[in-house]
Image (tube, rainbow, N blue to C red; front, side, top):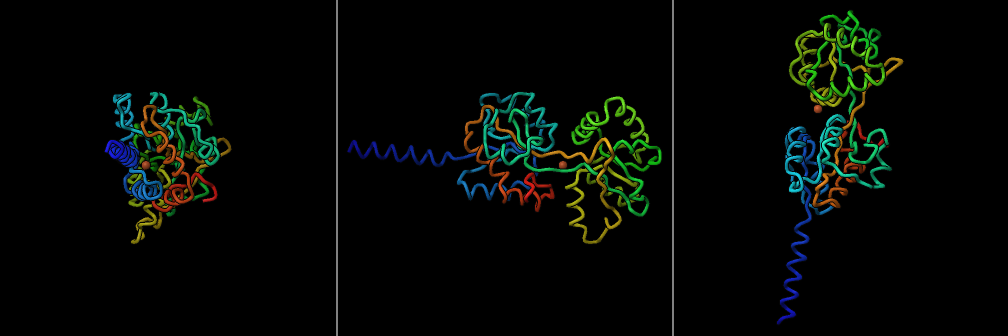
Amino acid sequence: MKLLLIFTHLFILIAQGYSKEELNLYSARQEVLMRPLIKLFEDEYKIKVNIVSAKANQLINRIVQEGEYTNADILLTTDVGRLHIAKEKNIFQKIDSITLTNLIPSNYRDKDNYWFGVSLRARLLVYNKNSINKSDLNGYIDLANNKWKSKILVRSSNNVYNQSLISAMVIKYGEEEVKKFLKGFISNFARKPSGGDRDQIRAVAAGEGDLALVNSYYFLKMKSQDNKKKLGHVVEYFPKDNFMQTHINISGAGIIKNSKNKENAIKFLEFLVSNEAQKIYAEVNFEYPILKKI
Ligand code: FE
């Protein structure tokens, strides 16, 4: 009888152990993109994924406040700027995974392995080919040229995409050049910045301005859905000059310092750079895979 009781206890403990295989994802990425990835991961690894969705800064602040009591295992977000802030706020832990360091090029992950890029995007120009000659386009710094007066559309500077681009420009062109650039650039705006990247693309299509600075996946996705050819005259240009080529940014993730499911979290990050997950990033969200072969 006693033996039976011990076995029953053991069984319950094991069953609990199995049912505990889970992962808590704090995600600043759109659910439409994450759902197919998560479904695939859950089926393959038998790990239940719980998602908490919010804006990146809200998630970062929440993880800071929750401290050691947090349920978060992973923070998933876009832009190296936000991943950098998360590392500065000390919410990530260093991860040693040969899979991650082998697959992700070193320029797309933290030098101390606190965060990892999993997909790529370009901050490019889209322009109205009926009013602009491609041969007149150049690198980013040329957007300060007064030939673009009242033609440029861009979202507000409080957005991290612009902040990261300007940071990259400071590295490539130097602070003084970029200060001068910003004055000219702003004076070339077609209107006061408003809306997101998609709104700038729509404004080019509608003729409110002639060129816009936007992230590649927004444009590619809108083009793919453009059945009525409203965007037929809007095309892309990858800025490039002798100092700087097109700014490439990442979406990425880090494992939370106080994670209670670290092993599962590592499995998830490694899954995100698998061939099948990388295909989903390209096919569902129009991002560039971080794996060259995909
Ligand atoms: Fe975005």
